[in-house]
Image (cartoon, rainbow, N blue to C red; front, top):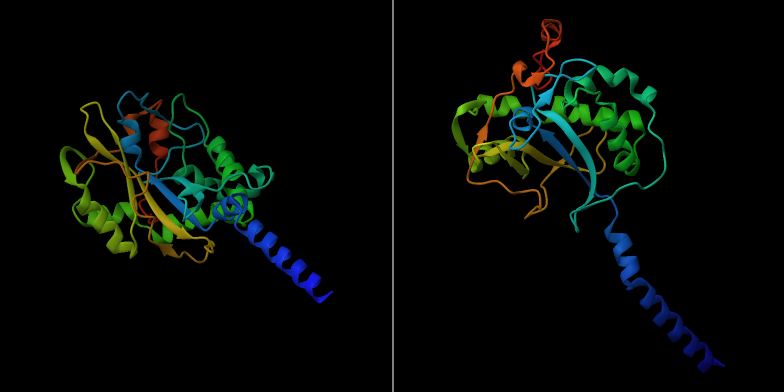
Length: 264
């Protein structure tokens, strides 16, 4: 009998080992959300991109003259892959009614033809927000708080001589080092190209710990050799001006608020 129990124990351990080492379970574990990519976009580069449709005045209100929020993506650090659609929880525009003013300023939609930014917010929540562990309000509040309190991107660049202009190019390493010194962590920069074939500073990816809330913002270094890194040695930093927004009127000009990094 003792021998039989010993044999059974060996079989149980063997099966457990197989289960724990199965590719399916390893893949499942690797897909767990453990950090955010917080993506900020320079609208001047969006408007000036090669073969683009330009940019249009949003239907709700004029955006801020600043970097826009482009995403707060739930990712896995080991695989550098997104963790998405973890549950079916519908987007409720009413849940973020108190945030809509700031979202229209800083998470705007300047695509043409003119439209609302609400579809962007809905997609962000349905794809990534539902995996964050936060309620809808807290997810969007975190995105706004990071920009305002932790990542003063435009101010950091301008304070160090990186000004939006069509007349010069900037060393990418200099820009990247400025941002990383300010944040105390490595970031990833993604570029697009203009009609002249020049690389443009388009998106900055900042990595944020998964335990972040709208009151706590742990910035961490991003994965090395990120797939989003694609720029040349020098980049353009084109202006973002009102005349880039098709459909701009004198009334909408008056609506423009010159927010930079949360400072009025």
